[in-house]
Length: 171
Image: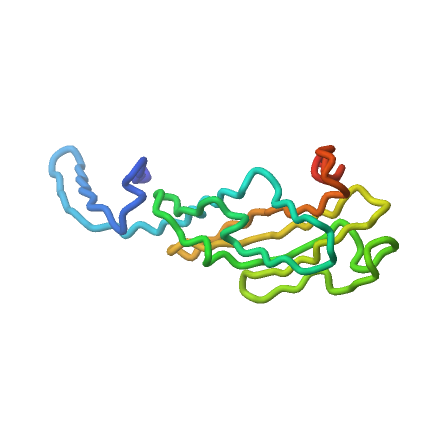
């Protein structure tokens, strides 16, 4: 028979737990206690803003985006808060080219300042449906386990209230 130790609920939110083991052969039994160290490898929870961050007007200037603007909350698996300013940017993408017809003939639309600040150029192609920037963030809990989540920033084609970009609805 293989011994099994089952931990449930809040007990995973401690550094260690005391266990008592009793072994019996039917005639004699032996009992001992030991502290078992908990190695919690669960990732933190990262909650991103539901609505995209909208940049307007499309004046070709940079707008600084920080984790605090994109991340609503972060907490470890036990519900303890994690400072969102510790999030780092893994990647930033745009659904429009850096320099395209009708976007002001600029380059370097994405300028990252490690570890977690990005300047995004507020522009979109005049013939397009609006620009969508996707920022991939990573946050790591005290246990060394990380999680990644995306934040969306848009420069709409116009402020008519129509869908910002067909790319927001693509799956």
